[in-house]
Image (cartoon, rainbow, N blue to C red; front, top):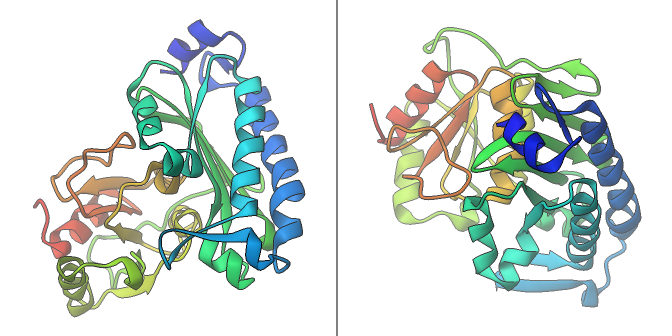
Length: 289
C-alpha cells in the first residue's frame, strides 16, 4: 500500500511505507497549528466562539474550524495530490466522506477531538490526523497538548509515544475484569444501553469516553483493555485504530469483520488489546461469535 502511494506521490513514502521525513513533517505541522489555533483558545473562548451543530452535545468552536483549515492547507502541501476528510468539512458537506473510497491519499482530520471537554476548559482533548489510502491507514498522529502527549504510528512499523515503543496489555482472554472505554451516555440509544449493560453484568469496568483519541491511546499503552463504540465517524477512529493495531491490538465489529474506516460496518465494534479480547468484547455485546 505504501509503495502504491509512493508511486503516485514521489518522495512522501519509502519502501516500507510513510517516510521518516513525512512523519516528522506532519508532527511539526500538527504541533504548530495546535500551538497557534487551539491552545491559545483553551479556557479563553467567548460565546461567539462556540456553536451548536446537530444538538446541544455536538459543539464546534473557532479553534476546531481554524485548526482544520490550517491543517488542510499544510497537509495537502506536504503530500501533493492528497485530499482531506475533516470533521468540520463533512459537517458542512457530507459528500466529502466519499473521498475515503477514492484513489487519492486521504488525510483524516479531527482538529479538536473532545470539543465538549475543550469548551469546559478540561485537558481531555486531542488533535488527530491519519493518512489513509484506499481505506487502509498508513500513518497516524495523536496529540494531546495539555497532557504533553504525542503518539505516532506507521503501518507495519509500530506505535510510539514520545519515542518509546507502545505495547498493549497482554494476557489470557479471561484474566480478569475488562477495563473498557465506552460510548458517551449522552449519545446512547436504548439498544446501545442494553448492550453495554451486558458488559457491566459480566464484570467489565466501563468508563464513558469523551475523547476517542485518548481512549485509543490508553489501549495502545496498556492502560485499558479496549473500547466498545457505536459510531463510525472516521475522524474519531482512523488515527487510534492504527495506533492500537501497531501496538498489538485488534478491531472487530458485531458482524465479525475488522472495522473499516470508510464505513459500512455492523455496529457496535471494539478495538481491543488483542484478537481474543476483541472477540470477548463483541460476544458480550451480543455480536458475532
